[in-house]
Length: 455
View: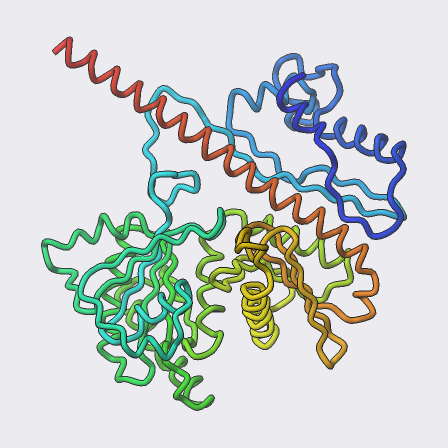
């Protein structure tokens, strides 16, 4: 049995909306699905790997040959349904390694790079609130305690590795950094950057900040055109609603006009109103981190399937450590809904730290048995369940929908299993890619040794 066939014979993961399928129905549909994906045993392409209609041949021998020789991506994995059951399966896009005689140069932004994590740069003028943002979001510091933070006078790097999805570096830059200083190698820094966050103090005169923003963005774009540029209009908690909107409009207009005058219309800036005294900074950082997650479309698809078959109105996949949601369904996010989810996570962890520890202090306060249900006075139910060690699923649903809790729990089990499959696929690809790069390095070393002997 080939490795591909063994992978396809794995147990099914589905989202059930009605009676369970009988074993005969499941076997029939699984067989039909495998024949559709792999084709029949008979090859009709005569070795050309193309069918009569010009499309790639789907026979088993040609398909496995295609996987073994070139980059292949399989997308949607096995779905079948009947009138009483919706059975959905997803297979992640799995680009296989393309072996070639020439060495492959590994870029910093490569999804499978294991040596350098994606970077998020925090930049801005002095006292704009960069270090406070980092401490509040990722180190659970109280906003009031940030008043005693000293001004940053050197580049500070912080590794964030809460899960396979939330895995990056944050570089906090001092406000007085000079890009024209010959000792500052901005090309090396910007080349490995996934997102650049520029923080502007909304309560101060921001003309100098806009000039520095233009200089920073233009320099970074010349080095790395794949950077996501994010602008945090910070410290808006002291402004009125009208003043917030006017400030955002003015900064947005001036920043884009400066880029247009310099002929940099291709640069896209995203603007967020933020404050460490509410949940706006967590929501803004969530949107920044989501752009760095290559599995985001798959996660959103899983959440859409889950809520549509469980009677759930809204679902968030949270990193419970930082309260950043790494994925949500296609329904637009309401700020009040997000705030309730963050408050629920805080309540669950605070209570778990008191009552969740086992005897003699052993075990973890957050594990696979962690679950929480909060019923609000407007017939809304908040439902939290553990997905992985650092991830939690928070759902919004009505009380009448929560009466089918057994169905929701079954669908959640399927969702949780799919998330773990995503982890396994990515871990396998990272391991294979690391072995491939080691092989390439050994080949380069051997070739250099031979050249040295000949010379």
